Length: 198
Image (cartoon, rainbow, N blue to C red; front, top):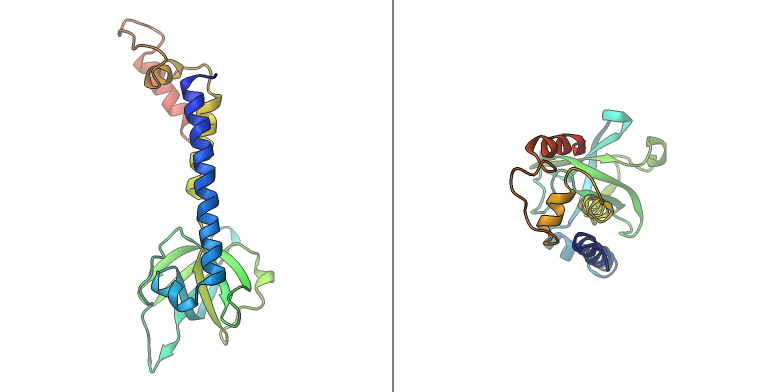
């Protein structure tokens, strides 16, 4: 049997993996079995959008702005949705929901438009044009999953260092020491904190 911190990390890594698998399965099931209208009602789909513009953004990423079809002289507002900056979305042609053209990250939201930074290089997006209509579908976000997984892996592999005493106290494998103990000082804790920040 390992240390309490290692046991905690291993157990939560398993739970985190199960949660991630369930989230991906739910997104896949929605995509395959639920109508666009129902997905839109749930706030995870924006159908019938046209490409308003595309430009090159930071690091050469393609920024594509989508907007609803024009209704008369003015643009319509986007329907109610749960999209926000940082969400991962799939771009689909309206002809077939399962034909994913690209994936990207929402970079900007406005009442009448949504801009995404597309992951694929520009030459693979020749099918994007202003004559077609597109559907944006919110995909499972793996950023939080990756961060939690990395933190739990780091905790499970941490054996010695400036914060090992603190970890032992927090997980109940040792008692707190008095302030005269030189192993854990505020200077050591601050050094560790500054070393671990990216």
